[in-house]
Image: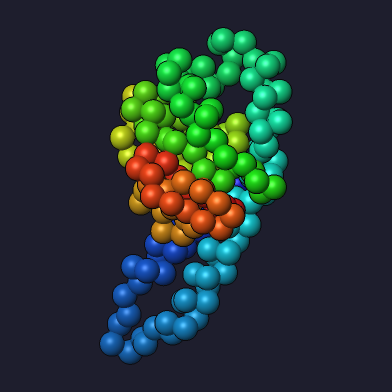
Amino acid sequence: MRSHLLALLVISTLGLLSNRTASANDKPDRGADETIAMQLASSYVEQQQIVRRNAPVHSAVQLAAFLARTTRTESPINALSPAAKVRFIDSLRFNEAGVTSFYYADIESELSISQAYELLSIFGLQSTLSVMPKLRATTQEDKQIMSAFGRETASRIMADHENYWCSGRATCSRDVGSICMSGC
């Protein structure tokens, strides 16, 4: 929760900086604004790296162990239809930093925002909710999550690449419905 609040602070501050209007006597120091924005963006990226590093699953070995110990109902992955679950699991690519890419189109079409948040939290990928505007918002919790992670907020400083997958070290290739993570 603390990381979510920090991310919101970063995003809000960036929004204030980008929306700031100067009076006739107040000339904005664009260099200072850009420096602050860069520092906040860097902090956000570091926060996301920590979230991903501390996620329950950040390797193929950990994924296999996670799937082996979860039953049909206790894993957020099981909220996906059987075919979507297979596509999602098969799409996950890992390196030493964690997930480098995954296919999200099924998540977007089948899950609510809360369900998607729970699923992505397994991998520390909550910030990628911002690329999934078609997720259903049916509860107050859904609305709060989308407010915190929606396209209007995190995508301003997100370093991930929508509609690409990690095809090789530091190489994102076009693939609609996938996301190539900054650690590719």
